[in-house]
Length: 158
Image 1 (spheres, rainbow, N blue to C red):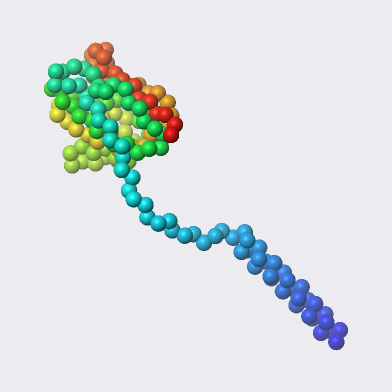
Image 2: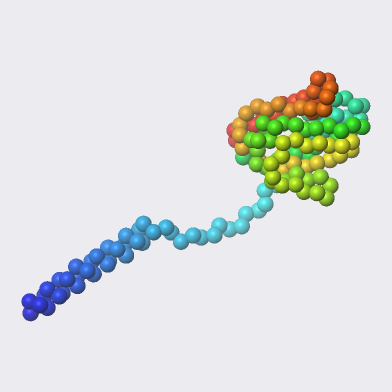
């Protein structure tokens, strides 16, 4: 009888340990992942900028751009002037996540630092601003910056 009681006590003791182990695993184990329902694609906010104009003025139209951090934008750049221009804002470009740049039937992915637009050229830059701040925009072609082809870009918190 004593052996039976000893055996029963040891079995109950082990059973309790197993029960506690299972309970702890259920409490501290990560929950089963559940897939989120598919979301609709985000439509970027479109912003248009002209690099110069048909009168050959060396300006960006508009020359001040404002974006909210975390929102997706499609910057549509066009060059209606008879000469090439650059959209250069390196510090701004370093502070955004670029999804793509599209020009004609070419799509470029990865880091972008400046865009060159030939006469009548059009490019679309889809990006999400990440780093708040104020940035300088310019066309680095000799004489263009000095003639006023400059601007500012602001990224504000959302």
